[in-house]
Length: 393
Image (tube, rainbow, N blue to C red; front, top):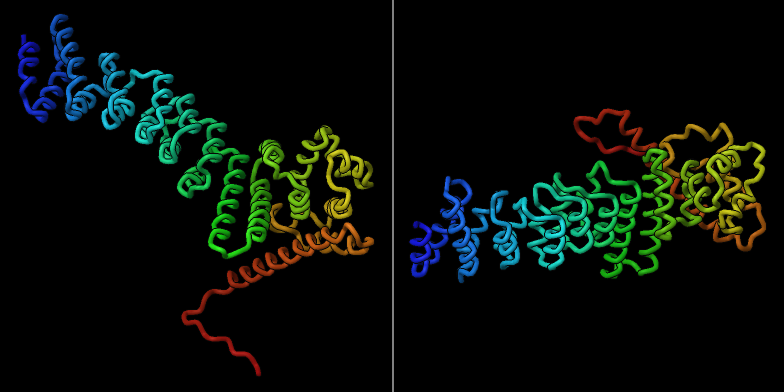
């Protein structure tokens, strides 16, 4: 019997020759027309080869059997428990492993094995969830780039929580068409925190100042995301902001001063527990009835109520409809009106509000000037040779 001869030969053959013979034996087992006795003998020989001292031999066995559904399950599970370079081959390719097998292999905590599992042609949801929960950054990146991986929103959120500070993972996530709006906002928040920590570590800015700038930039980006999102995704975004502690009165005031009434409505629904229809009715009531009660029920600070009241009244007026830039940029006319009305209020607790409104006004003026200058440049064709402008003395 040829298998008996093979077993006698491998006792003294060099490792490289044993590897070649092992590969030939495995292919014969899978694809040759062997008798039942020969198949049993070949399987026994391969089981014995699992104890070969050379990883080259075991690697050859793994490569020959990895993609076949006819490979002996006992051998495949043994190879999956072998040293990393051997186990990665079968974990990345074999169709014989159950989801539970792959989850257990990922839980071993070996980065190369997690990467191998993440790059399988098909990665079911439970396995993706395990990679998202315990996988290294490289494995999560490979998982996100794998079109055959089923990754649910919860797993995307876990990847953001654990590795969202890494640029490569952020970029891949932001390119996904199925990325939920709350997850996109979480990425923005993670980026803001990362940049604040970076400039602080470099002593470029004081920690308090860096965190303040990062928070303001995050709020600005959040309003932009909300403005570009369909209405059905605004509610989940508000829930995410509330759960993460980002649903602040400053963010809501910015949204309202940008003309984003939809985000403000959803926030009031979430905070007050009042129905969406009732909230919309109160906000769009030209007589302004019930807004103060709704505001208080939402738990918003009484000290900045005047600004919200004036902003809502401005939004009700026809003259403030149809502003440029949609609902993502601060509306200078609305801010100036709100600021003028609030300045007439007796000073005291309202001073921080005036400071915030003046900062919004400065930001809106800069955005307006930038947009105006860009429009002027776009209207004039660039000259062939730039000529230095001359000014009268």
